[in-house]
Image 1 (cartoon, rainbow, N blue to C red):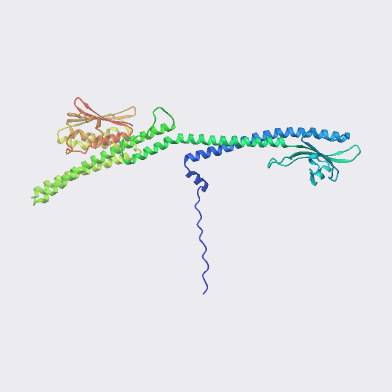
Image 2 (tube, rainbow, N blue to C red):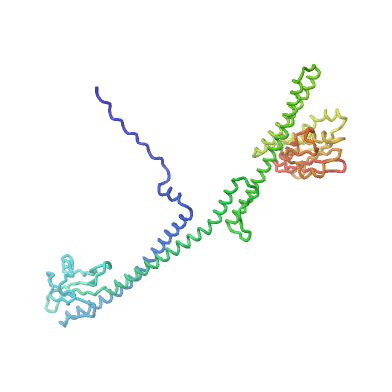
Length: 471
């Protein structure tokens, strides 16, 4: 039985992403990245400046050396043509070669040193002029030369190769010294720039670190904490600190509202549930007659309806708060007010009260699905918490819809007006009275969703609530 073929190794391709070096760079602290960026940038700048200075000095020294070499070569050729004794200034040297490259005459400095290669000799014999350096800038060499070689015809018609040379010691020493000084200066400048960059980065980011430490201390739930923002500055970090403090204040206020909302909602839900439990316990304690059971069921029905109303009110507020934009559509003002008021007329008639409406003929662009129940809430509040008739006035002028509901009664208590539109706030001292304390909060939310306002006040005859929104 043949063996199965070897399995082909499964190679998993590495996921495409940013280069590893970039990921390592981004993992570095910001201060280190800033210091490295400053160091790299300064290295490039200093390298360019150093190269430029070195090139300019080298060019000037080479021009001077070439000029001196040209003068010495000219004097050497004149001496050859005149048959005078050959010589030259200090630091100069010469060689006279025959056409085969053998040294015929030379100064003591280069008497035993061949200055031209066979290829150079061939080029000069063919009529070329050779200019080049012997020895380099580094390592140190006391016998570095710059030479110039060319073919010369003597008065006796012989052809020789004249090589004029000058020592480059002073030039090379000056360049080496320049390199050392430039390296020291560049190194000190780079260190100073890196240190200044580090201190600048630390000074810029230390406030951010302080903000982070103080923000981390907020995790323990302590209220009233704020970031340490100096008041005598107006830079980017200071403005960031003020913005964060404003955000912290908003978050703290929101958290406080949420805690208050949960406490009030728990209280509102606990009361009807407790009443329901009490009614059921009493009904089950002993046998009851049909009349007693009917009364118990009606009481239970009342509390269940109270729970339903409270739940619907909370859901409406939540839906309204989560809506980014209301859906405006043209609607007749008379029809809008009538549809909001008519469901409450039977209740008013039972109490021998009247609801009067004064709506100016107009067409307004609002979200009727929210405006209608808001006006209905105002009418319901007026019927439940006042005596006498209820009056509704609606006008549309200069792009604003104003609906005012007034009643005849004692009006709002003075201490209730500043918090009339807060959730679960009631004018009555007892929380067992009808209502959930969400009606006016719902009206304010509807007005806010339409970029409008709601206002409550007392009149000589009672209370008045005004809904003012752009339309």
